[in-house]
Amino acid sequence: METAIRVEGLFKTFQSGWVRRRRLPVLRDLRLAIPAGTIFGILGPNGAGKTTLISILATLLLPDAGMVEVLGLDVRRQAAKVRRRINLASGAAKFVWSLTVLENLRFYGHLYGLWGRQLAVRVEEMVALFELQEYRHSPFETLSSGLKQRLALAKALISRPELLFLDEPTNGLDPIAAQHSREEILRLNRQTGVTIILTTHNLREAEQLCQEVGFLGEGRILAQGSIRALQTQLGLGDRVILEGAGPLPRLAYQQLPGVLRCRQNETHLELILDHSDSRLPLVIQEINQAGGLIRAIRVEAADLEDLFREFSR
Amino acid sequence: MSLVAEAVKAWAFAARGGIMNCRNVFAVLEMLFWPLVGLFSVGLLTRFLDLGPATVSFVLIGSVAMNTVQIAQLDVSYALLYDVWAKSLKHGFIAPIHVIHVILGSGLVGFIRGLVVFIVMLALSIWAFGMDLRQAGWLGLTIFFLGLFLVAVIEGVLVLSLVLLFGHRAEITAWAISYLVLLLAGLYYPVTLLPVSLQAVAQLIPLTHFMEYFRSFYGFPVSASAPLARGFLLSLAYLAAGYGLITVSLRRARQRGTLLKLSE
Image 1 (cartoon, each protein chain N blue to C red):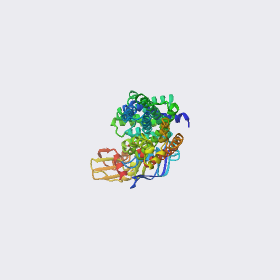
Image 2: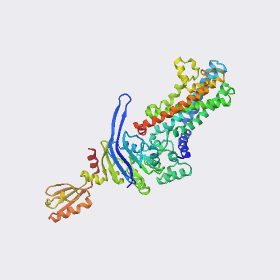
Image 3: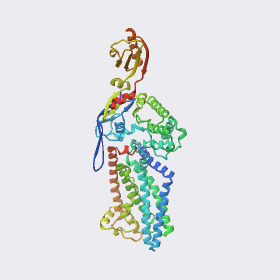
């Protein structure tokens, strides 16, 4: 599979103050590879460096050291070429207040060299795609948060990017607007094949959208993979509590496939399973074969916040 | 790289500046109200002081120059300040543009607005205070305006660089910088009245030479020979230096994260 992003040994430290210099290291020896065509999530707590990383990839920020390739191009030496092929939308979208939806889209279209009929057609496509027809002449400052976000996505796609950066794309949206935005993002990826890299601290959003995530902490990627794979790696999974009609047999549950942890008293068995749907039938079968009788089963889906806490620790 | 595509990128800033100016009452005030207040207050002062026609022209040339430069310079500065105020700066700089697109596009709006102010103020100077423009002729007027416009672009580029370097703290320079330059360039007085050390500084300002060139049509001496050549050569040097400075400032803004800070 082609690689959209390749990062090796990336360092970034912010310096502030003209007289008394203050140094704030944000990224330290970061390594990352992201396959093309996927939706990749960069997760991490506030201040972990998600926006810094995405800004370096988007050529808005220069790295101090390290190799950073975007679509096979070096972000330092070939930044202009990178910019032609990428775009970005942020949560809490902000554009010039008194320009209308159409004027904003035309302005950013012009910045990518689009003009005349080509620009007019593209603007209309974006207006239709994001259902902004009714608001085409509305100034940006009069739009609701959801509409602003749709305009931000429309602006980000006006240049037909091969790689789209979404920095906390549902930040500040109400739950319905946030869900709508997520559906748009999924649709875009499926329809156009655009690689999408998004930052979020919303794990459920990451689970819904991303084929793969990288967890950012201490200035580097602490783990990378699917949410499920990361849960397994940390021993975080679905919690299953089996209540016996009488004493439950003491078996080597830990040896069964998919069992991450196990705790048992006389009548209760608590298991952490990587996938409760597929693993539980075997556990029940083992208990039945050993003469145990189950009275009740309770399944609690994996708490994604646990994953977050575990990595943030 | 298509030339049309590059022109379109510059046009983006011109079109946006145009829309913002047409839609903003403050922009109309800025263009007509304050310049007229300035012109009339200075013109009436010359009447009170009972100055002769040549001296009145000398003073009015200063007033015309001040307002033309300020308006044209503000449009160049606004090219980035709109984005700074809207916190949308990063969206411009993630696009495949260069600072030259920003300067050319905003410079076009500054040229048009500056020209309107220049024409209106000269017309009022003739009508209200009897200034005689025939002495300078069309060529003299055209060269004088071009000189003022170049000074405005240089000041605008300096403001853009300072905004990229220092962020919001540099916004005030958009308004302050032209006053400082005008003070040193002999706004309402010959630069020979300045302290000697400042006279040397005045010689390094192109506006000094452009104003002296235009005032020479009214019989006033120039402080250095060949004022036009000096004015244009200095302007070219400052434009080149300004271009270098803004390129470095943008690079530094990408290093220090200023583009992000100004978008939060």
